Image 1 (cartoon, rainbow over the protein chains, first blue to last red):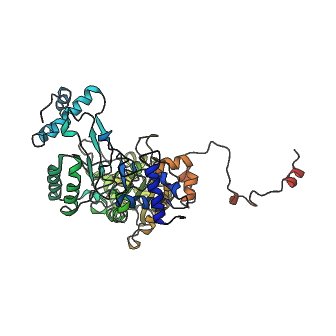
Image 2: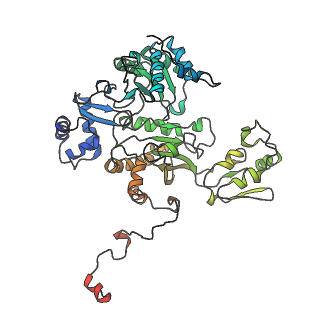
Image 3: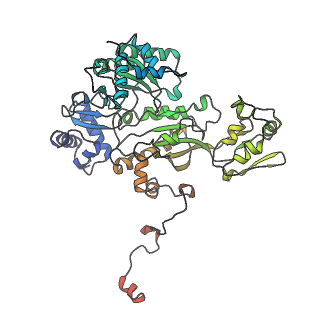
Length: 77
Length: 426
């Protein structure tokens, strides 16, 4: 892992806030630190959800991540 | 909420079978939003299109699974089902619960939801159908604090693990399915409640090859009980079956007169590997050819039992027919000892080897069985550090090329091309 956990979280949040897609798969965050393991990336993204900075978006079969306020419910589409 | 005219749905009440329409009408007397379910389903039948939308940010704090957001796309017509989220509850192992527990869950659902349930979902969860976003957190609080019950899995998570009745009621259980299921459920709480994978991942545990929870057909990781020594035979009981002293199949299928029990016709000739025969009145089995189909044991349970050296076969990669057709799990590890004393460390090691690889290599929305199909079984076996066996091969090869790895070839792939050309002119 080249980045520290806090740096990885910051990179993930940056991508979620400024990337072209509002909703991202966990694999989309792997590029934030190519040396980090998939579990490290997953844990960092899940920490951001616990901190209230990101949301889980789930179709029921697939789960994606979104920066707080960027994803929409089907109710609002 | 008003009643809606439902002439198409009413047709479904006319048969001799139980009808969900009748159930919904009865429930609507207590929960008027059920009238709107009927109205919306009637409209879908008429329009020949669903009027449900699914997905969203619904959930309870800290959990990424267990709640499936569902909305009506005609909320003005049917406001009672504008939000109609599904809640999945983790069932107890083998679905053993008291009637008091079921009443408590139903009462909770009458309080916070529509009262409609689905017992059980295909992963085994108790499925509660229809609640609103504001009700989710209070429901979760009561569920966890008063009922000591947790949500199940949904989304790209480890789904709620499921097991057969196992040794609680079945003498063929080759390991304690309930304990393994419960232990792994507790061990992998983070993976059940928060997304971790490219797509869903299911565990199922069957105590014997009868596979009562359809692990081989439905789960990404199937643990199916088996034995590695010989089927135990009670020759006196075999003679008893032949004489008609015991009912075959433990009395099942006895509603019809099938005639006198015929061991040749009903057991020996039906053995898929033809590994059984009679020598006089003694039953013989070539156990090296047995494929664990369980037929002989099912027909003569007093005479035949699984062997004593018990454990499980690990099969990987089944899925239902969503993308590329239904797929059975592939036998990966023929025999694994299931050891409670090590807290199932051997099983956990296999699971995490699969996860580490699939999380890296699997594409988004690709089940592990599809990843194996894409990269090929030889690659997967190499990842799993399993030596290929004849049983891993589906059919004789039709491709004449053999691809060798460098370490499998004496001297490797290094060669002096000039030396080669001296002997093999262009």
